[in-house]
Image (cartoon, rainbow, N blue to C red; front, side, top):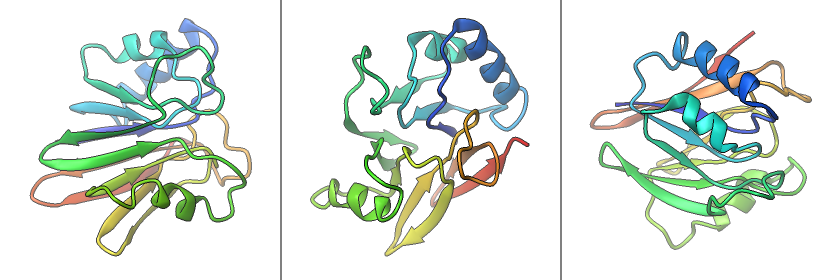
Length: 161
């Protein structure tokens, strides 16, 4: 199972969503089975651009008019994936988001907010921040994430530049 991972898309129009989704679906997200969006500009229009691929999202600090939950756990390919946007300064964001899932059994934690891509294991848990495909801020480039689920789970950050 292949899962495309997004965060911090910061798009405002359906046209921008269509351009982004087509670029991803014809590139790094070709053949994906699901999309995870870790918040900020989770527009219903963007979700529709990926249809009929299953879409799971959480609300970010810039998502004031959407109904997505702030935190969720989805099960895909037999793996439990925790999702949360994140908050505050980039420093120590991993510890803050990890603390939100202290009493949950998850295999992966997907988060965003900092626009800083990250994919690493910590104590058997895969942490993934896909960065941003549209607004790199202080990151080295525009990025998305890809999770591959089989008997184990593998994550990678993919540069769009």
